[in-house]
Amino acid sequence: MIALTGVSRVFGARAVVSNVSLKVEAGTILTIVGTSGSGKTTLLRMINRLVEPSAGTVRIAGRDIRDVPPHILRRGIGYAIQGHGLFPHRTVAENIAVVPRLLGWDRRRIAARVDALLALFHLDPGAYRDRFPAALSGGEQQRIGVARALAAEPPVLLMDEPFGALDPIIRGQAQADLLAIQRRTGTTVVLVTHDMDEALHLGDRIAVMDRGRLVQEAAPAALIGAPATDFVRALLGRGDRAFQLMALSVVDDLVEPGPAPGEPIPAGTSVRAALAESLWSQRPALPVSRDGVLLGRVTRTALEAQGARP
Image (cartoon, rainbow, N blue to C red; front, side, top):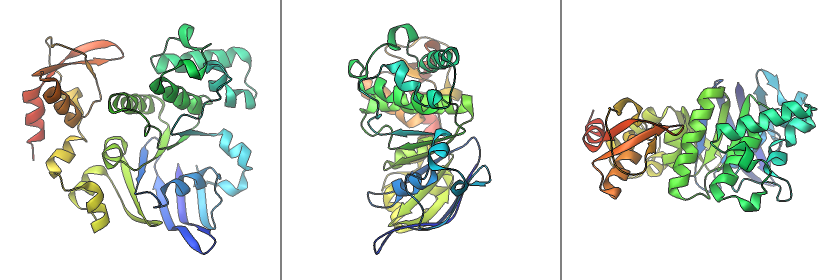
């Protein structure tokens, strides 16, 4: 879906991105991770021409993006940023409808799309469509920001630190929502993050940037198993690799029938996050739900056994 070939960006005498080549398969999530100043956001913005490459080519579905006027290109690419970027004086429905209106959709189609997206993000359309952003929680605002990016059914969604401002619990739910929606829609996602755990959890492939260069691009398990440089190793941290691999498995396959106390965790939660919740809440078993429906429970014993696998 996306192909970058020899892409560079120079500001003055400084190369912010240097000769990066990458491919993103259709229907997958690529996470780009690196420290501040590594060039990851600049690389992302070159895909929708918010930053023009100094050299190299970017193609989407085989077409050179330079052949498309920037404003037309961006209408076909979803874009979600940290802090949501909602228009404060527009309602939730008006915010979500921005790009469909630019594309000339009729009112009935726009209204149906707004309601469908709100429902997809577990927000009651009747209760939310006429609210203003100031009346929403931070997590709700971020969900509306992602809904707006998906409103025109773009084949590509670019996300720049979308969950960085959320607290850990809401962040985990937002990540689970993204994975569920991406699997349902088949959207190709490129997501920038400075959080290696988030990159490992969300990405089908991970691209690691260091001082403007792509130093490794691999599947999560391969990255953990064989970091290419000391920088990648440092990003992964000094923790037990088995514990890191637990972040790549989800609880879905470990659910069993039976009750469990307390607030349920969503299906799609990583084994590591579920084990942490079990320990912190001192619950030997956790209820698991999907779209508000209880599926069963996952036990601490099952989570520990999964983490102990080679």
